[in-house]
Image 1 (spheres, rainbow, N blue to C red):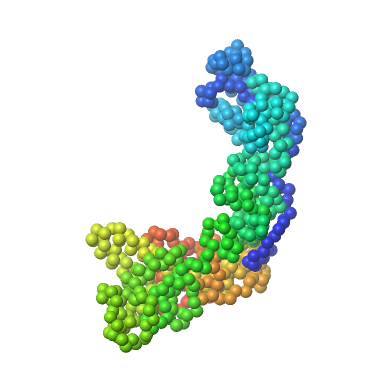
Image 2: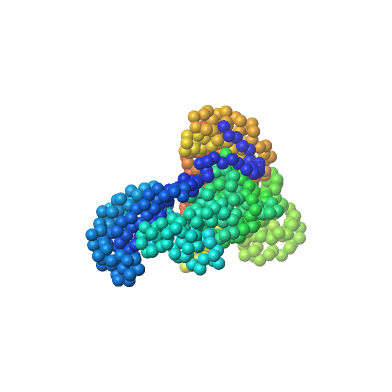
Length: 608
Protein backbone atom coordinates (compact mmCIF):
# COMPACT_ATOMS: atom_id res chain seq x y z
CA UNK A 1 0.00 0.00 0.00
CA UNK A 2 1.34 3.42 -0.98
CA UNK A 3 -0.38 6.48 0.45
CA UNK A 4 0.87 10.01 -0.06
CA UNK A 5 -0.35 13.47 0.73
CA UNK A 6 0.23 16.16 -1.85
CA UNK A 7 2.58 18.51 -0.02
CA UNK A 8 5.74 19.21 -1.99
CA UNK A 9 8.64 17.05 -0.92
CA UNK A 10 12.08 16.54 -2.44
CA UNK A 11 14.00 13.29 -2.54
CA UNK A 12 17.63 13.89 -3.37
CA UNK A 13 18.74 10.36 -4.19
CA UNK A 14 17.22 6.98 -4.86
CA UNK A 15 19.02 3.67 -5.21
CA UNK A 16 18.42 2.32 -8.70
CA UNK A 17 18.26 -1.34 -9.61
CA UNK A 18 20.72 -2.98 -11.99
CA UNK A 19 17.99 -3.26 -14.61
CA UNK A 20 17.74 0.51 -14.76
CA UNK A 21 21.44 0.98 -15.60
CA UNK A 22 21.25 -0.30 -19.18
CA UNK A 23 23.43 -2.90 -20.91
CA UNK A 24 27.12 -2.57 -19.89
CA UNK A 25 29.40 -2.27 -22.90
CA UNK A 26 31.48 -5.21 -21.65
CA UNK A 27 28.42 -7.43 -22.10
CA UNK A 28 27.59 -6.20 -25.61
CA UNK A 29 28.47 -8.33 -28.65
CA UNK A 30 29.58 -6.06 -31.49
CA UNK A 31 29.67 -7.28 -35.09
CA UNK A 32 31.93 -4.95 -37.05
CA UNK A 33 31.06 -5.10 -40.75
CA UNK A 34 32.60 -3.79 -43.94
CA UNK A 35 31.29 -4.22 -47.48
CA UNK A 36 32.94 -3.77 -50.83
CA UNK A 37 30.49 -2.90 -53.62
CA UNK A 38 30.36 -1.96 -57.25
CA UNK A 39 29.62 1.62 -56.14
CA UNK A 40 26.52 3.77 -56.01
CA UNK A 41 23.25 3.11 -54.23
CA UNK A 42 21.83 -0.33 -53.32
CA UNK A 43 19.18 -0.07 -56.03
CA UNK A 44 21.79 0.14 -58.77
CA UNK A 45 24.89 -1.57 -57.32
CA UNK A 46 25.91 -4.94 -55.93
CA UNK A 47 28.02 -6.31 -53.08
CA UNK A 48 31.38 -7.83 -54.07
CA UNK A 49 32.78 -8.74 -50.63
CA UNK A 50 31.61 -9.04 -47.03
CA UNK A 51 33.94 -8.95 -44.07
CA UNK A 52 32.93 -9.00 -40.39
CA UNK A 53 34.49 -9.39 -36.95
CA UNK A 54 32.49 -10.49 -33.90
CA UNK A 55 33.86 -9.18 -30.57
CA UNK A 56 32.79 -8.90 -26.94
CA UNK A 57 34.70 -7.29 -24.06
CA UNK A 58 37.65 -6.69 -26.40
CA UNK A 59 37.96 -10.35 -27.36
CA UNK A 60 37.52 -11.52 -30.95
CA UNK A 61 34.91 -14.27 -31.03
CA UNK A 62 34.99 -14.97 -34.77
CA UNK A 63 35.49 -13.58 -38.26
CA UNK A 64 33.46 -13.79 -41.47
CA UNK A 65 34.75 -13.18 -44.99
CA UNK A 66 33.48 -14.03 -48.43
CA UNK A 67 33.64 -12.72 -51.96
CA UNK A 68 30.30 -12.23 -53.72
CA UNK A 69 29.49 -12.36 -57.40
CA UNK A 70 27.35 -9.23 -57.89
CA UNK A 71 26.01 -10.39 -61.25
CA UNK A 72 27.04 -7.10 -62.85
CA UNK A 73 30.36 -5.82 -64.22
CA UNK A 74 32.67 -4.16 -61.72
CA UNK A 75 33.62 -0.63 -62.86
CA UNK A 76 37.33 -0.16 -63.61
CA UNK A 77 37.84 2.55 -60.98
CA UNK A 78 36.33 0.27 -58.30
CA UNK A 79 38.53 -2.61 -59.41
CA UNK A 80 41.58 -0.34 -59.22
CA UNK A 81 40.62 0.81 -55.69
CA UNK A 82 39.81 -2.61 -54.18
CA UNK A 83 41.72 -5.00 -56.36
CA UNK A 84 38.50 -6.98 -56.88
CA UNK A 85 37.89 -7.62 -60.59
CA UNK A 86 35.30 -9.51 -62.59
CA UNK A 87 37.75 -12.43 -62.76
CA UNK A 88 38.17 -12.35 -58.95
CA UNK A 89 34.46 -12.93 -58.33
CA UNK A 90 33.73 -15.10 -61.37
CA UNK A 91 33.52 -18.29 -59.28
CA UNK A 92 32.27 -16.63 -56.06
CA UNK A 93 28.79 -17.44 -54.73
CA UNK A 94 25.88 -15.11 -55.40
CA UNK A 95 24.51 -12.88 -52.65
CA UNK A 96 21.42 -15.01 -52.09
CA UNK A 97 23.65 -17.96 -51.17
CA UNK A 98 25.89 -16.14 -48.66
CA UNK A 99 23.30 -13.87 -47.03
CA UNK A 100 21.84 -16.51 -44.66
CA UNK A 101 25.32 -17.33 -43.36
CA UNK A 102 26.07 -13.68 -42.73
CA UNK A 103 22.76 -13.11 -40.93
CA UNK A 104 23.52 -16.11 -38.73
CA UNK A 105 26.95 -14.64 -37.95
CA UNK A 106 25.34 -11.29 -37.12
CA UNK A 107 22.82 -12.92 -34.80
CA UNK A 108 21.68 -10.58 -32.04
CA UNK A 109 24.85 -8.52 -32.14
CA UNK A 110 25.13 -4.75 -32.48
CA UNK A 111 26.07 -3.86 -36.04
CA UNK A 112 29.09 -1.55 -36.25
CA UNK A 113 30.42 0.00 -39.45
CA UNK A 114 32.34 3.03 -40.59
CA UNK A 115 29.73 5.22 -42.29
CA UNK A 116 27.16 2.67 -41.15
CA UNK A 117 24.17 4.04 -43.09
CA UNK A 118 25.89 2.98 -46.34
CA UNK A 119 26.63 -0.62 -45.28
CA UNK A 120 23.33 -1.06 -43.42
CA UNK A 121 21.47 0.25 -46.48
CA UNK A 122 23.03 -2.42 -48.72
CA UNK A 123 22.32 -5.21 -46.22
CA UNK A 124 18.74 -4.09 -45.68
CA UNK A 125 18.15 -3.97 -49.45
CA UNK A 126 19.72 -7.44 -49.85
CA UNK A 127 17.34 -8.89 -47.26
CA UNK A 128 14.40 -7.33 -49.02
CA UNK A 129 15.55 -8.60 -52.43
CA UNK A 130 16.05 -12.19 -51.24
CA UNK A 131 13.01 -12.38 -48.94
CA UNK A 132 14.92 -12.48 -45.65
CA UNK A 133 13.71 -10.62 -42.56
CA UNK A 134 16.04 -7.76 -41.70
CA UNK A 135 16.93 -8.29 -37.99
CA UNK A 136 16.93 -4.53 -37.42
CA UNK A 137 19.93 -4.57 -35.08
CA UNK A 138 21.16 -1.67 -33.01
CA UNK A 139 23.67 0.24 -35.16
CA UNK A 140 26.80 2.14 -34.16
CA UNK A 141 28.54 4.35 -36.73
CA UNK A 142 32.23 4.77 -35.88
CA UNK A 143 32.50 7.74 -38.24
CA UNK A 144 29.70 9.56 -36.42
CA UNK A 145 31.10 8.50 -33.04
CA UNK A 146 34.51 9.89 -33.95
CA UNK A 147 33.08 13.23 -35.06
CA UNK A 148 31.35 13.58 -31.69
CA UNK A 149 34.07 12.20 -29.41
CA UNK A 150 37.22 13.72 -30.94
CA UNK A 151 38.27 17.34 -31.01
CA UNK A 152 38.82 18.87 -34.43
CA UNK A 153 42.51 19.48 -33.69
CA UNK A 154 43.14 15.78 -32.93
CA UNK A 155 42.65 14.41 -36.43
CA UNK A 156 42.49 16.13 -39.80
CA UNK A 157 39.40 14.11 -40.75
CA UNK A 158 37.39 11.05 -39.71
CA UNK A 159 38.29 8.71 -42.55
CA UNK A 160 38.93 5.12 -41.54
CA UNK A 161 42.62 5.28 -42.56
CA UNK A 162 43.13 8.46 -40.53
CA UNK A 163 41.44 7.05 -37.43
CA UNK A 164 43.28 3.74 -37.73
CA UNK A 165 46.59 5.60 -37.67
CA UNK A 166 45.41 7.82 -34.80
CA UNK A 167 44.51 4.83 -32.62
CA UNK A 168 47.49 2.72 -33.80
CA UNK A 169 45.33 -0.02 -35.23
CA UNK A 170 47.00 -3.39 -35.76
CA UNK A 171 45.67 -3.60 -39.32
CA UNK A 172 45.93 -0.94 -42.02
CA UNK A 173 42.78 -0.41 -44.10
CA UNK A 174 43.27 -1.75 -47.63
CA UNK A 175 39.78 -1.38 -49.14
CA UNK A 176 39.28 -5.10 -48.65
CA UNK A 177 36.36 -6.05 -46.47
CA UNK A 178 37.99 -8.13 -43.72
CA UNK A 179 41.03 -5.86 -43.36
CA UNK A 180 38.80 -2.80 -43.10
CA UNK A 181 36.52 -4.59 -40.58
CA UNK A 182 39.58 -5.46 -38.46
CA UNK A 183 40.81 -1.85 -38.61
CA UNK A 184 37.33 -0.60 -37.69
CA UNK A 185 37.38 -2.96 -34.70
CA UNK A 186 40.53 -1.30 -33.35
CA UNK A 187 39.06 2.14 -34.03
CA UNK A 188 35.88 1.17 -32.15
CA UNK A 189 37.88 0.10 -29.11
CA UNK A 190 39.84 3.33 -29.17
CA UNK A 191 36.67 5.39 -29.37
CA UNK A 192 35.04 3.43 -26.55
CA UNK A 193 38.00 4.28 -24.36
CA UNK A 194 37.63 7.93 -25.26
CA UNK A 195 33.87 8.19 -24.60
CA UNK A 196 34.28 6.47 -21.23
CA UNK A 197 35.61 9.84 -20.04
CA UNK A 198 32.12 11.22 -20.74
CA UNK A 199 30.46 8.59 -18.55
CA UNK A 200 29.45 6.35 -21.48
CA UNK A 201 29.39 2.88 -19.96
CA UNK A 202 26.30 1.25 -21.48
CA UNK A 203 24.98 0.55 -24.95
CA UNK A 204 22.14 3.00 -24.30
CA UNK A 205 24.69 5.66 -23.36
CA UNK A 206 26.65 4.97 -26.53
CA UNK A 207 23.65 5.31 -28.84
CA UNK A 208 22.57 8.52 -27.13
CA UNK A 209 26.11 9.88 -27.29
CA UNK A 210 26.20 9.65 -31.06
CA UNK A 211 23.05 11.75 -31.35
CA UNK A 212 23.16 15.37 -32.44
CA UNK A 213 23.63 16.89 -29.02
CA UNK A 214 26.01 19.61 -27.86
CA UNK A 215 29.03 18.82 -25.75
CA UNK A 216 27.65 20.98 -22.93
CA UNK A 217 24.50 18.83 -22.87
CA UNK A 218 26.49 15.61 -22.79
CA UNK A 219 28.61 16.79 -19.86
CA UNK A 220 25.43 17.23 -17.79
CA UNK A 221 24.33 13.61 -18.22
CA UNK A 222 25.41 12.82 -14.68
CA UNK A 223 22.45 14.86 -13.42
CA UNK A 224 20.24 11.86 -14.20
CA UNK A 225 22.34 9.51 -12.07
CA UNK A 226 20.49 8.17 -9.05
CA UNK A 227 17.07 9.39 -10.14
CA UNK A 228 14.21 6.90 -9.72
CA UNK A 229 12.57 5.46 -12.81
CA UNK A 230 9.11 5.89 -11.28
CA UNK A 231 6.20 8.29 -11.92
CA UNK A 232 6.60 11.76 -10.53
CA UNK A 233 7.90 15.29 -10.98
CA UNK A 234 11.42 16.48 -11.70
CA UNK A 235 12.80 19.97 -11.06
CA UNK A 236 15.90 21.31 -12.81
CA UNK A 237 17.69 23.82 -10.55
CA UNK A 238 20.58 26.22 -11.06
CA UNK A 239 23.63 26.74 -8.85
CA UNK A 240 21.61 28.95 -6.47
CA UNK A 241 18.89 26.32 -6.10
CA UNK A 242 16.30 28.27 -8.08
CA UNK A 243 13.91 26.23 -10.21
CA UNK A 244 14.63 26.42 -13.94
CA UNK A 245 12.10 23.92 -15.26
CA UNK A 246 9.46 21.64 -13.77
CA UNK A 247 8.23 18.58 -15.63
CA UNK A 248 6.36 15.36 -15.04
CA UNK A 249 6.85 11.84 -16.37
CA UNK A 250 5.88 8.24 -15.81
CA UNK A 251 9.61 7.44 -15.71
CA UNK A 252 11.60 10.28 -14.11
CA UNK A 253 15.10 9.00 -14.81
CA UNK A 254 14.38 8.05 -18.42
CA UNK A 255 12.75 11.41 -19.11
CA UNK A 256 15.56 13.43 -17.54
CA UNK A 257 18.17 11.48 -19.51
CA UNK A 258 16.39 12.47 -22.73
CA UNK A 259 17.34 16.12 -22.12
CA UNK A 260 20.97 15.17 -22.76
CA UNK A 261 20.34 13.33 -26.03
CA UNK A 262 19.53 14.15 -29.63
CA UNK A 263 15.83 13.63 -28.95
CA UNK A 264 15.74 17.01 -27.23
CA UNK A 265 15.51 19.60 -30.03
CA UNK A 266 14.11 22.63 -28.19
CA UNK A 267 16.64 25.47 -28.13
CA UNK A 268 15.40 26.83 -24.80
CA UNK A 269 15.81 23.41 -23.21
CA UNK A 270 19.40 23.25 -24.41
CA UNK A 271 20.00 26.61 -22.79
CA UNK A 272 18.30 25.42 -19.60
CA UNK A 273 20.46 22.27 -19.43
CA UNK A 274 23.63 24.35 -19.70
CA UNK A 275 22.56 26.35 -16.62
CA UNK A 276 21.23 23.43 -14.58
CA UNK A 277 23.33 22.07 -11.72
CA UNK A 278 21.01 19.46 -10.23
CA UNK A 279 17.68 17.70 -10.70
CA UNK A 280 15.35 17.08 -7.77
CA UNK A 281 12.95 14.14 -8.17
CA UNK A 282 9.56 13.99 -6.45
CA UNK A 283 8.16 10.44 -6.77
CA UNK A 284 4.35 10.26 -6.85
CA UNK A 285 1.82 7.51 -6.27
CA UNK A 286 -0.19 8.34 -9.42
CA UNK A 287 0.04 10.31 -12.64
CA UNK A 288 -2.64 12.74 -11.43
CA UNK A 289 -0.65 13.50 -8.30
CA UNK A 290 2.37 14.21 -10.49
CA UNK A 291 0.40 16.64 -12.67
CA UNK A 292 -0.98 18.41 -9.62
CA UNK A 293 2.47 18.75 -8.05
CA UNK A 294 3.77 20.15 -11.33
CA UNK A 295 1.02 22.77 -11.43
CA UNK A 296 1.67 23.81 -7.83
CA UNK A 297 5.44 23.98 -8.26
CA UNK A 298 5.16 26.09 -11.40
CA UNK A 299 2.85 28.48 -9.55
CA UNK A 300 5.00 28.66 -6.42
CA UNK A 301 8.53 28.61 -7.86
CA UNK A 302 7.96 30.46 -11.15
CA UNK A 303 10.54 28.51 -13.22
CA UNK A 304 11.56 30.70 -16.11
CA UNK A 305 11.74 27.91 -18.72
CA UNK A 306 8.18 26.65 -18.27
CA UNK A 307 5.76 27.82 -20.96
CA UNK A 308 2.68 26.88 -18.96
CA UNK A 309 1.12 29.84 -17.13
CA UNK A 310 3.16 30.77 -14.08
CA UNK A 311 0.45 33.10 -12.78
CA UNK A 312 -2.70 31.01 -12.47
CA UNK A 313 -4.03 33.28 -9.73
CA UNK A 314 -4.34 36.13 -12.23
CA UNK A 315 -6.86 34.42 -14.52
CA UNK A 316 -9.87 36.72 -14.91
CA UNK A 317 -13.42 36.04 -13.72
CA UNK A 318 -16.59 37.77 -14.86
CA UNK A 319 -18.52 39.10 -11.88
CA UNK A 320 -22.07 40.38 -11.46
CA UNK A 321 -21.49 42.85 -8.67
CA UNK A 322 -23.48 43.15 -5.46
CA UNK A 323 -24.42 46.83 -5.38
CA UNK A 324 -27.60 48.90 -5.79
CA UNK A 325 -27.30 48.83 -9.59
CA UNK A 326 -25.31 45.65 -10.33
CA UNK A 327 -23.00 45.55 -13.33
CA UNK A 328 -20.63 43.12 -15.00
CA UNK A 329 -17.03 43.54 -13.91
CA UNK A 330 -13.82 41.64 -14.73
CA UNK A 331 -12.01 40.65 -11.52
CA UNK A 332 -8.99 38.53 -10.60
CA UNK A 333 -10.44 36.54 -7.72
CA UNK A 334 -13.71 35.26 -6.32
CA UNK A 335 -14.78 37.01 -3.11
CA UNK A 336 -17.09 35.84 -0.33
CA UNK A 337 -19.97 38.07 -1.39
CA UNK A 338 -22.38 35.73 -3.14
CA UNK A 339 -24.84 35.84 -0.25
CA UNK A 340 -25.23 39.53 -1.14
CA UNK A 341 -26.17 38.69 -4.73
CA UNK A 342 -22.80 38.57 -6.52
CA UNK A 343 -22.31 35.87 -9.15
CA UNK A 344 -19.20 34.68 -11.02
CA UNK A 345 -18.27 33.01 -14.31
CA UNK A 346 -14.82 31.72 -15.15
CA UNK A 347 -11.97 31.61 -14.96
CA UNK A 348 -11.24 32.78 -18.50
CA UNK A 349 -8.00 32.23 -20.36
CA UNK A 350 -7.55 35.95 -20.95
CA UNK A 351 -9.16 39.31 -20.36
CA UNK A 352 -10.16 39.39 -24.03
CA UNK A 353 -12.16 36.18 -23.57
CA UNK A 354 -13.88 37.63 -20.48
CA UNK A 355 -14.75 40.77 -22.44
CA UNK A 356 -16.23 38.66 -25.26
CA UNK A 357 -18.51 36.85 -22.78
CA UNK A 358 -19.47 40.17 -21.20
CA UNK A 359 -20.42 41.60 -24.60
CA UNK A 360 -22.85 38.75 -25.19
CA UNK A 361 -24.39 38.96 -21.73
CA UNK A 362 -24.92 42.70 -22.14
CA UNK A 363 -26.55 42.07 -25.49
CA UNK A 364 -29.07 39.75 -23.81
CA UNK A 365 -29.43 41.83 -20.63
CA UNK A 366 -28.76 45.55 -21.06
CA UNK A 367 -27.10 46.23 -17.72
CA UNK A 368 -24.86 49.24 -17.34
CA UNK A 369 -21.28 49.24 -18.54
CA UNK A 370 -20.10 52.20 -16.44
CA UNK A 371 -18.28 51.79 -13.11
CA UNK A 372 -19.63 54.82 -11.24
CA UNK A 373 -21.25 54.30 -7.84
CA UNK A 374 -25.04 54.54 -8.03
CA UNK A 375 -27.51 54.97 -5.20
CA UNK A 376 -30.44 52.61 -4.83
CA UNK A 377 -32.86 55.49 -5.49
CA UNK A 378 -30.99 58.27 -7.31
CA UNK A 379 -32.63 61.68 -6.95
CA UNK A 380 -30.73 63.64 -9.58
CA UNK A 381 -32.16 63.89 -13.07
CA UNK A 382 -28.78 63.01 -14.50
CA UNK A 383 -28.77 62.90 -18.32
CA UNK A 384 -28.66 59.33 -19.55
CA UNK A 385 -25.53 58.07 -21.29
CA UNK A 386 -25.27 57.05 -24.94
CA UNK A 387 -26.07 53.41 -24.16
CA UNK A 388 -29.36 54.43 -22.54
CA UNK A 389 -30.25 56.55 -25.54
CA UNK A 390 -29.59 53.51 -27.75
CA UNK A 391 -31.89 51.39 -25.60
CA UNK A 392 -29.04 49.25 -24.24
CA UNK A 393 -29.30 50.42 -20.61
CA UNK A 394 -32.29 51.30 -18.41
CA UNK A 395 -30.33 54.22 -16.87
CA UNK A 396 -30.41 53.29 -13.16
CA UNK A 397 -28.15 56.29 -12.55
CA UNK A 398 -31.00 58.72 -13.24
CA UNK A 399 -34.19 59.36 -11.26
CA UNK A 400 -35.99 59.16 -14.58
CA UNK A 401 -34.60 55.73 -15.41
CA UNK A 402 -36.66 52.59 -15.62
CA UNK A 403 -35.49 50.86 -12.46
CA UNK A 404 -38.03 48.05 -12.75
CA UNK A 405 -36.73 47.08 -16.17
CA UNK A 406 -33.17 47.31 -14.94
CA UNK A 407 -33.85 45.04 -11.96
CA UNK A 408 -35.55 42.54 -14.27
CA UNK A 409 -32.47 42.53 -16.53
CA UNK A 410 -30.22 41.93 -13.51
CA UNK A 411 -32.37 39.02 -12.33
CA UNK A 412 -32.30 37.48 -15.80
CA UNK A 413 -28.54 37.90 -15.90
CA UNK A 414 -28.19 36.33 -12.46
CA UNK A 415 -30.28 33.35 -13.62
CA UNK A 416 -27.99 32.86 -16.62
CA UNK A 417 -24.93 32.91 -14.37
CA UNK A 418 -26.62 30.39 -12.08
CA UNK A 419 -27.04 27.91 -14.91
CA UNK A 420 -30.01 28.90 -17.11
CA UNK A 421 -28.08 29.87 -20.25
CA UNK A 422 -30.94 29.71 -22.78
CA UNK A 423 -31.79 33.45 -22.87
CA UNK A 424 -28.18 34.33 -23.72
CA UNK A 425 -28.08 31.61 -26.38
CA UNK A 426 -31.34 32.90 -27.89
CA UNK A 427 -30.01 36.47 -27.97
CA UNK A 428 -26.83 35.38 -29.71
CA UNK A 429 -28.70 33.30 -32.28
CA UNK A 430 -31.08 36.16 -33.03
CA UNK A 431 -28.12 38.48 -33.50
CA UNK A 432 -26.35 36.03 -35.81
CA UNK A 433 -29.52 35.47 -37.83
CA UNK A 434 -29.94 39.20 -38.37
CA UNK A 435 -26.30 39.62 -39.41
CA UNK A 436 -26.45 36.71 -41.83
CA UNK A 437 -29.58 38.22 -43.41
CA UNK A 438 -27.50 41.34 -44.01
CA UNK A 439 -24.68 39.16 -45.38
CA UNK A 440 -22.38 40.32 -42.60
CA UNK A 441 -20.87 36.88 -42.17
CA UNK A 442 -17.70 37.94 -40.38
CA UNK A 443 -19.69 39.82 -37.75
CA UNK A 444 -21.95 36.78 -37.32
CA UNK A 445 -18.91 34.58 -36.84
CA UNK A 446 -17.62 36.87 -34.08
CA UNK A 447 -20.93 36.56 -32.23
CA UNK A 448 -20.75 32.79 -32.64
CA UNK A 449 -17.28 32.88 -31.08
CA UNK A 450 -18.62 34.96 -28.18
CA UNK A 451 -21.36 32.39 -27.63
CA UNK A 452 -18.79 29.59 -27.64
CA UNK A 453 -16.66 31.41 -25.06
CA UNK A 454 -19.67 32.09 -22.83
CA UNK A 455 -20.97 28.52 -23.02
CA UNK A 456 -17.57 27.05 -22.22
CA UNK A 457 -17.15 29.47 -19.31
CA UNK A 458 -20.58 28.61 -17.92
CA UNK A 459 -19.92 24.87 -18.13
CA UNK A 460 -16.47 25.34 -16.57
CA UNK A 461 -17.91 27.44 -13.75
CA UNK A 462 -20.49 24.88 -12.71
CA UNK A 463 -18.10 21.97 -13.01
CA UNK A 464 -15.66 23.78 -10.73
CA UNK A 465 -18.48 24.73 -8.37
CA UNK A 466 -19.43 21.06 -8.04
CA UNK A 467 -15.92 20.17 -6.90
CA UNK A 468 -15.48 23.28 -4.76
CA UNK A 469 -18.68 22.56 -2.86
CA UNK A 470 -17.82 18.93 -2.08
CA UNK A 471 -16.08 18.58 1.27
CA UNK A 472 -14.78 15.17 0.29
CA UNK A 473 -14.73 12.98 -2.80
CA UNK A 474 -12.92 9.66 -3.06
CA UNK A 475 -12.57 8.15 -6.53
CA UNK A 476 -10.61 5.25 -7.95
CA UNK A 477 -9.48 3.96 -11.33
CA UNK A 478 -8.17 0.49 -12.21
CA UNK A 479 -4.54 0.21 -13.29
CA UNK A 480 -3.36 -2.06 -16.12
CA UNK A 481 -1.74 -4.45 -13.62
CA UNK A 482 -5.02 -5.04 -11.78
CA UNK A 483 -4.48 -2.58 -8.94
CA UNK A 484 -6.21 0.71 -8.16
CA UNK A 485 -5.11 4.33 -8.11
CA UNK A 486 -7.17 6.23 -5.57
CA UNK A 487 -7.53 9.99 -5.04
CA UNK A 488 -8.91 12.06 -2.21
CA UNK A 489 -10.36 15.43 -3.28
CA UNK A 490 -11.44 18.11 -0.81
CA UNK A 491 -13.10 21.32 -1.98
CA UNK A 492 -11.58 20.91 -5.45
CA UNK A 493 -8.04 20.35 -4.19
CA UNK A 494 -6.16 17.05 -4.30
CA UNK A 495 -5.67 16.09 -0.65
CA UNK A 496 -4.02 12.72 -1.16
CA UNK A 497 -3.18 9.95 -3.59
CA UNK A 498 -2.72 6.22 -3.06
CA UNK A 499 -2.04 3.06 -5.00
CA UNK A 500 -3.59 -0.27 -4.04
CA UNK A 501 -1.47 -3.14 -5.31
CA UNK A 502 -2.99 -5.94 -7.37
CA UNK A 503 -4.67 -8.65 -5.35
CA UNK A 504 -5.12 -6.54 -2.22
CA UNK A 505 -8.33 -5.18 -0.70
CA UNK A 506 -8.46 -1.46 -1.63
CA UNK A 507 -10.84 -0.55 1.21
CA UNK A 508 -8.11 -0.27 3.90
CA UNK A 509 -6.14 1.90 1.46
CA UNK A 510 -9.15 4.21 1.11
CA UNK A 511 -9.56 4.51 4.89
CA UNK A 512 -5.84 5.20 5.38
CA UNK A 513 -5.92 7.80 2.62
CA UNK A 514 -8.92 9.61 4.13
CA UNK A 515 -7.26 9.59 7.56
CA UNK A 516 -3.89 10.82 6.28
CA UNK A 517 -5.10 13.28 3.64
CA UNK A 518 -4.38 17.00 3.81
CA UNK A 519 -6.85 19.23 5.61
CA UNK A 520 -8.29 21.72 3.13
CA UNK A 521 -10.14 24.89 4.01
CA UNK A 522 -13.05 25.59 1.63
CA UNK A 523 -12.70 28.34 -0.93
CA UNK A 524 -15.43 30.58 -2.29
CA UNK A 525 -17.36 28.52 -4.87
CA UNK A 526 -17.34 28.43 -7.78
CA UNK A 527 -13.61 28.93 -7.16
CA UNK A 528 -12.02 25.78 -5.72
CA UNK A 529 -9.81 25.80 -2.65
CA UNK A 530 -6.77 25.16 -4.83
CA UNK A 531 -5.72 26.48 -8.20
CA UNK A 532 -8.39 26.34 -10.93
CA UNK A 533 -5.86 24.61 -13.18
CA UNK A 534 -5.45 21.88 -10.56
CA UNK A 535 -9.22 21.44 -10.29
CA UNK A 536 -9.42 21.22 -14.07
CA UNK A 537 -6.88 18.36 -14.06
CA UNK A 538 -8.91 16.61 -11.38
CA UNK A 539 -12.08 17.00 -13.45
CA UNK A 540 -10.29 15.63 -16.51
CA UNK A 541 -9.25 12.57 -14.52
CA UNK A 542 -12.74 12.10 -13.08
CA UNK A 543 -14.16 12.21 -16.61
CA UNK A 544 -11.75 9.56 -17.90
CA UNK A 545 -13.04 6.04 -18.68
CA UNK A 546 -13.08 3.58 -15.80
CA UNK A 547 -13.02 6.09 -12.94
CA UNK A 548 -15.43 5.17 -10.16
CA UNK A 549 -16.79 7.19 -7.28
CA UNK A 550 -16.09 5.50 -3.98
CA UNK A 551 -17.37 8.16 -1.63
CA UNK A 552 -18.80 11.67 -1.88
CA UNK A 553 -19.91 14.08 0.80
CA UNK A 554 -22.46 15.72 -1.51
CA UNK A 555 -24.46 14.81 -4.62
CA UNK A 556 -22.72 15.51 -7.90
CA UNK A 557 -24.95 17.47 -10.25
CA UNK A 558 -25.06 20.30 -12.77
CA UNK A 559 -27.77 22.59 -14.05
CA UNK A 560 -29.10 21.04 -17.24
CA UNK A 561 -28.96 24.35 -19.10
CA UNK A 562 -25.51 25.45 -17.94
CA UNK A 563 -23.92 25.26 -21.39
CA UNK A 564 -22.93 21.69 -22.12
CA UNK A 565 -25.43 21.22 -24.93
CA UNK A 566 -24.41 24.52 -26.52
CA UNK A 567 -20.73 23.65 -26.28
CA UNK A 568 -21.35 20.31 -27.93
CA UNK A 569 -23.56 21.78 -30.63
CA UNK A 570 -20.98 24.39 -31.52
CA UNK A 571 -18.36 21.68 -31.75
CA UNK A 572 -15.87 23.51 -29.57
CA UNK A 573 -15.14 20.65 -27.18
CA UNK A 574 -16.12 17.05 -26.92
CA UNK A 575 -18.87 16.01 -24.59
CA UNK A 576 -17.67 14.85 -21.22
CA UNK A 577 -17.34 11.10 -20.80
CA UNK A 578 -20.46 9.43 -19.37
CA UNK A 579 -18.79 6.40 -17.86
CA UNK A 580 -18.82 7.15 -14.17
CA UNK A 581 -20.04 4.17 -12.14
CA UNK A 582 -21.54 5.47 -8.88
CA UNK A 583 -20.90 3.11 -6.00
CA UNK A 584 -22.08 5.16 -3.01
CA UNK A 585 -25.77 5.40 -2.17
CA UNK A 586 -25.55 9.01 -1.08
CA UNK A 587 -24.10 10.04 -4.44
CA UNK A 588 -27.23 8.78 -6.17
CA UNK A 589 -29.53 10.80 -3.93
CA UNK A 590 -31.74 13.28 -5.76
CA UNK A 591 -30.51 16.87 -5.56
CA UNK A 592 -32.90 19.71 -4.89
CA UNK A 593 -33.13 22.41 -7.55
CA UNK A 594 -31.43 25.66 -6.64
CA UNK A 595 -32.20 29.10 -7.99
CA UNK A 596 -34.13 29.70 -11.18
CA UNK A 597 -32.43 26.81 -12.96
CA UNK A 598 -35.28 24.46 -12.12
CA UNK A 599 -34.01 21.83 -14.51
CA UNK A 600 -31.40 20.53 -12.09
CA UNK A 601 -30.73 16.82 -12.35
CA UNK A 602 -28.39 14.38 -10.69
CA UNK A 603 -25.60 13.65 -13.13
CA UNK A 604 -23.43 10.58 -13.30
CA UNK A 605 -20.67 12.79 -14.62
CA UNK A 606 -19.24 16.23 -14.03
CA UNK A 607 -20.43 17.25 -17.47
CA UNK A 608 -23.57 18.49 -19.15
